[in-house]
Length: 414
Image (cartoon, rainbow, N blue to C red):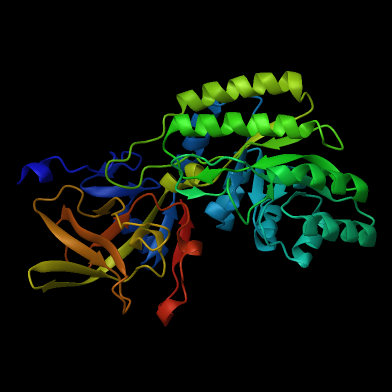
């Protein structure tokens, strides 16, 4: 082994899922038994215990006065959303379809908000009829909501999604700062607030979301502090007192070699200071953090079965029955600039006698269908179960499931 190989970064230790008798336990059940219970591979499994623990951990770190919302877009599986609705204070949706899932889960419409740059007229009607909060992202949405209010006799509830004049440093995806399709540019918000007042919409507050998937607490602290400062300035021009202030999220989870879990301590301390300040400066406002990936990402696994093993010019390939059509992110085709391996194991061989370096691929007729490239793991054969960790967010619904007509995937909550 060379010096560079000895110093190569590794994945952060993954200890959330237990191991017994050499087999991974998911939902307290040996993986092979769970696969038999599900009745097929591939499948996603999400563990209730881990969802509960993640929310519980956040509750101990974040100030009690701060509300915690779950962003359904991270994982809209109805059973999972129903579980999360009982753990958090509110839900955030990004479409009429997600709104139906939220309402079916029994969420309080007063604690549901709707964000997205292209809300269709029918979706806006759904939102107004349901009585949820709409985060308006353009002057056109204000006009449409005013017309819907006139038609229905209902008063639309609105907050302004602000495109801030700064970015969340080191975020995986920047969703604020610069020219963006998201929200209304901060410098245009005063004019939008005047439009809201003129049309008689029920103004409730502001929503700011600078970016996602950040593992640097100092960057999140800075973004939240600047978001509050911007909202406090804009509040002076608002047609009504601010009652809702969504400071966004951006909390990341470790996916790739060299990444470490996010340190929540500095974030909690900073938010405590913001909450205290808001109690004086925006006394009617409820402050919210909106998280998706951080709440559910580490609670899920994707399980696929080896259906062939082959060697091509010295390189071993494990061919599986699942691939990028069901887990696009793990293939590297969901925003990665340089492809990196997700943490991956042979779930029924957790105490292997032999290890090997292999590439794991799916069944699709494209070289993009690559789940792990030259990764060391337990020696595996046909019938073994490959497990991809960190798969609870942006998995099945973020993947091109119809590509090449393969059988559908199953999701279970255990």
